[in-house]
Amino acid sequence: MNAFSRRGACPALSAPMQTGDGLLVRLNPVAGGISPKSMIGLGESALRHGNGIMEVTARGSLQIRGLTAESARLLADEVDALGIAVRTGVPVETGPLAGIDPEENADPRPLAEQIRAAIGEAGLTARLGPKVSVVVDGGGQLTMDAVTADVRLKAVWAGDDVLWSLSVAGDERSARPLATVDADASRDIAVAALRMVAERGREAHTRDLSERQLNSLARWHSVTPPSVLPDISPARTEGGVKKRQPKIHPIDTFALTGGDALGIALPYGSMPAQNLIDLAAQSANLGATEIRLAPGRALLFLGLSASSLLKASAAALGFVTDPADPRTRIAACPGAPACASGRIATRAIAETIAKESADLLDASLTLHISGCAKGCAHPGTAALTLVGDENGAGLVVDGTAKALPAAYRPGYDAARGVAGILAAIRDGRHQGETAACLKRLGAASIAELYRRNQ
Image (cartoon, rainbow, N blue to C red; front, side):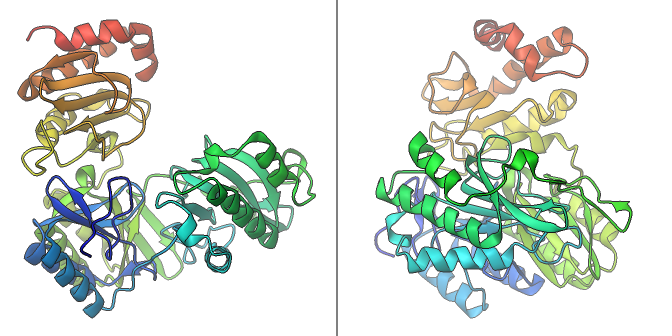
């Protein structure tokens, strides 16, 4: 652990990454989840060895921040002592309810394990970059639709059979479809796509593959095109009862075989370790047997005897328990003063905006508040991005934190500038729209609204 991973790599337990507030490690348990007792142990380790902040990422990984070289070694020893096996190698991710959701089209875990084994046998692990990933989604109540991946496989019904719809380079909406095939063929195509990526170097992804390569993958196994396969639908009826509409957001209660799972989220993906310790302890008292990490910066508590009691406790501790909570619409890194790289108090700005403009923060308007130009909390494009630098809080319209800001105002007053933009949306929007109104206003007008009344 003497050589820390570079920015853009994945900060695994064995390779912590240097950040503005010390070293950061990321944990992905192999067995799907951990016990409340182990979560308490992790929280206590974070208090002893880090800065007392724990996070769950947008992809559902657990992070511990503020470590030193020595304390990172001690943390790794304590994780091992807790008996928590952590995943290594190319991420092949399944949903947090994989194998326990009665509404899944198929259990994705066997196929995911076959793909992991095939990646290892092909010698691809060392040849692929740290951000290359695969998603295997069985469908069901809580999907992986919002998670981006180089290769996506999703179980779909074709008559009385289950096939796997394979696509590349994106999330469920943006990925390019390639084929709908059986499990063995989907494994072969997935690994072939990763071979092609590896041949282009460790910086490559499936988005870099040529049209010829993508066409060859799609033609590899001769199948009927997805558009004419019979009855392909994740919402298939069984026993005359139609399945419930699948969800992407994990803040809810999910009916499982043998009980329910309660989903709650960390505001902006971050919480003091002591709050997580307290919540895990209360969940154990209420019978929780397992805590699973979920995409969307969330935790799922399984085996509860009274989920309503834990939900109330979670809300009192500051967790997000309502999917309509405006904090779920804002991505914000730790910022100043928690991170030495942060130039603005991101969380304070986010809290003010969430309280004062809750009615205008919906799924169509993405708001990113970044302490610096690294954009750790939301690397992609957002409708509005606030980014801290030596000039204050810059505003980027329809871009990333790395883009040149169109306007500035002091960091302490940034929330008021955003409030001006949102007020203009309120006055000018059509029924039920927010982001579309932004486009009509135009980048220049939005920048002027942000600068106004300083």
